[in-house]
Image (cartoon, rainbow, N blue to C red; front, side, top):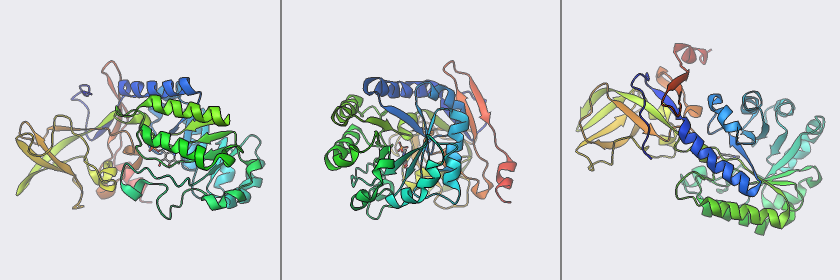
Length: 381
Ligand SMILES: Cc1ncc(COP(=O)(O)O)c(C=O)c1O
């Protein structure tokens, strides 16, 4: 899809949410909900932009959090259901969560036994158990992003499931996917139906986690819908999905400026955006993001390594080819920069944080937040 024109006036570095693209993605979520009756929550670990919440809350049922702060964000800013899962909770965290979240998921039967009195003290709070379904479908990063990789710390293993006090549990939670296409989603749903039916029959809802990359063109949403409907017809339970990336994939940009062109056998463009500080997944996964108007080295006449202005040698975004030579002051636009980008950024080297912006469907762009020296200074005590 061709990205829309971004105003030259945007000061860089800048993340820009494309509201028209987000609206398209939300239509997919609306269809899945409409055709299955399932609930869909936004996993705020992937994307936590309150400026986008009014649009998202029109379609989604709420948010799912990784701990107290995200739960608070969901409670204060999204305003619908708040679910929360963490592999372990800090002292006092569960007490505080009972005031924010109506669904608290635990990582083991032992945790449920430990926290049961605290949860029961707050009427209406429901308990979930995360299981480790032993279903691996890693499409990204191998074991790094496989919740069911060997020695995973996520979820109760099968041999402990008879220790779960099921009479107190409402939701069985099985997050096992990462950037999965429909075959992964359907595979997980059928795996739970086949391998864990005796436990599914003990709960009111099954949460199939995130990692459903429903807005990628090669994801056949009809197959997911059929699998959810089959599961619901078999067990008579509610179904919950909690995607993050799949809701906001391809909905925005990181806009950078070329600060300098350095030469060391190759041409190296140094940017005011950085992999280390602004797109850490580029180094962690690792992957090479798409740049608007650029191609793979050799496919266009002018090749450049794009790197950040930090002191980290590995702060390299990738090598790209352009139709024309790059110059100081040129704009570089990275695509698919809404998921796991600004939620993970940092001020290493004192590199300024990119501003947060929203591009409306009518082409107007508004700044949601700009950052300065204070953000760097405040974190240092
Ligand atoms: C428990 C849980 N739910 C949901 C998600 C969201 O996954 P994604 O952003 O890949 O859809 C994650 C991601 O790590 C997760 O750990």
